[in-house]
Image (cartoon, rainbow over all chains, first blue to last red; front, side, top):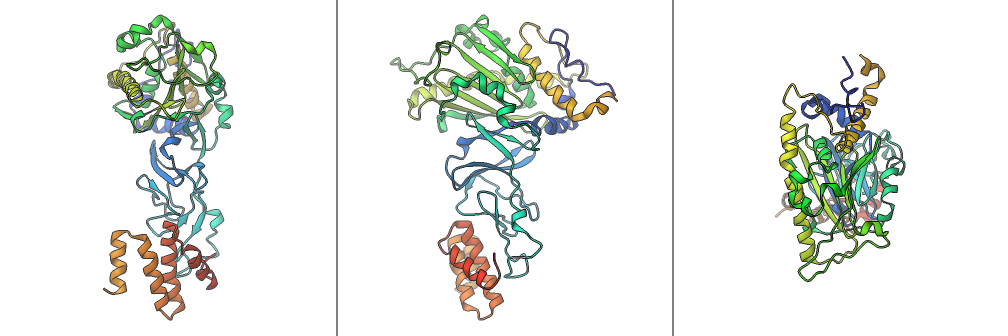
Length: 383
Length: 69
C-alpha cells in the first residue's frame, strides 16, 4: 500500500487534496474519527447550551455518546453518557438534573460531578452495597474538557496536550478578544444540516477565494482584495478582512464594541478554522462560533451561535445580524454538498490548490493528513 | 385504591415525589426489616433523583441497618 497522503503533504503549489476515501468511505471516516476528532481538542457544544446548574444535554459526537452538563456548583462537565453498570445510556433528552443522574435501567445514581452515589439492591434486595462494588472506582467516565470562547472543547481519548498549549496559536492571535462573551439567546443560534463530510465545511470556510462567486452580496463591500490568508501550518488557518463595516439599525445604532480593542479592529475582522471542527469569527462588535458535528461520512450538522460584548443588545438588530449570517452560511450549502457529490467521481485525485488563494485550505489538509499518518504509524504508512 | 395501586399509578405518571412518599409508607407498614429496607431503598433512590427533602432521612435509615454507605 502506498502512502496516499504523501502528495497532500507537499507544498501547496504542487500538493493534491485529500483523496476521495476521506470523504465517502466509512472505514476512513472511522479512522479519522479516532485520529482527527478524538485525539485532538474538538468542539462539542457551547457552554450556553447548559446555562443553569443541573442542565444536562446528551450529545452524539461522531457516534460517541456524551453527556454535557453544568454541575451543581456551576462547572461545565463532560461525561461519557454511559452507565458504569450495564452500559445503558443515562440521559436520553435534554433536561434538568434535579438531584442525581439516575440510570433508567437499574437506577444506579451519580452526582452531577460524576460520583457514583448509590447502587440499589446491588448486594441483593434492600442491600445497596457489596464488597466488590467500590463506588469510588465506578464514577462516570469524565472526558477532558475546556471552555474557550464559550465553546466546550473535548479531548475524547485523553492523549492531547493541555488545551492552552495545543491552542496557544489562536489564543495568542485573538488575545485582544479575551473578553466576556454573551450569547445572543434563542434568536442567535441556528443549525444547518448539510449532506457533506464535515471537512468540506472547514475547507470552504477558511478561504476567501469563493467570496465573489458564492457571496456576491458580501463581496460588494468586502472585496476579495481586501482579504488576507491566515496559514499557520500544523495549527490553524482562516482568512481576514481589512474592511469590516458594522451593522446599523434604521436609526444608525450599532452593537457596542468589545472593550480595549486596538485600532486595527475598527475595520478588520478575522475568521479562523480551529482544527478540527470549530469555525470562529471575531469582529469589533460581535463574534460567532460554528461547531461542526459529523453525522457520518456524508452528513454534517452545523451549529451556529452568535455572541455580543454585552448581555443587553437591541432585539431587532440582533435578529437582523443573525439573519444576515444565516443567508451567508446558507449560500455555502450548495458548495459543500456539490463538492461532496463530486468526490464520488472515482477518477478525482483530490484536486489541486491555487498557490495564491488556497493556502488556508491546504493548511487544513496537511494537518488532517499529518494526524492520520501519525495514527497509522510509520510502519503502516510505508506498507 | 390500595398502596400497590397508588404505586403503579405514580410510576405511570413518573411522579417521583409521590413515589418517595408511597415507598416510604410501604417501608413503615412492614414488620420485616429486609422488606422495609427494600422499600426504603426504592424511596431513597427516587428521593436522590428529585432532590427530595427526605433524602437524608432515608439514607440514615438504610445506613442504620447496614444497607447503604
